[in-house]
Image (cartoon, rainbow, N blue to C red):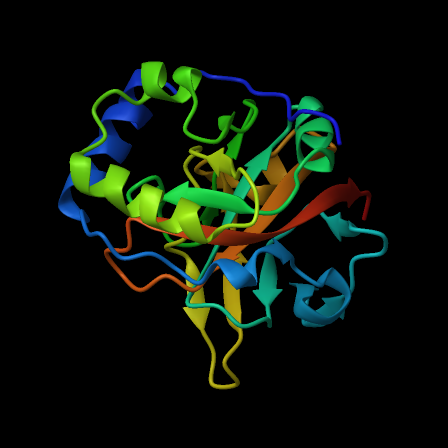
Length: 228
């Protein structure tokens, strides 16, 4: 198995924000490690646009440059997404392997119905490495203990995902699914988004609020805008 490509470099503002949230959410609880793996895109993910349901084909969904929604139908307390136009993101997620782990307080919040699409790669590390220590020196002792507790239960060294995932805009539906409705991208109308495509990674975890270390399920997706 090849070694994941790691790219440090959250902005200082995001770093400070995530550390602040981490401090507020400090807790030593962990999530069940046996849930590590990939989301079943065929059964658990749909896109909705103009009232119609669009199924991703081989992880790719063709959309018009208009508002759309992402529906997650799998089991989870907290689905989240990270989106980017960086072509290197595909190479990163192709190298993902279970278990995938993140720490509490690394999510981000955006305005309702807005999708933040970055130009960056994910910030990931091969476990609690020296590189991770250098970038995240302010992580508290309780989070370290939570990670150590989880690590003892994992079958292998995890990949640590520290990039801010947006988790605030998934609305729970009466059937138990979660829907992320997107009417704007980076604060502007979807029709104004100039790139022809972007990558999006859908994450899911079973962590209750305040959890400090959790295993992530994931699904890589590609969105391509078509004319019309």
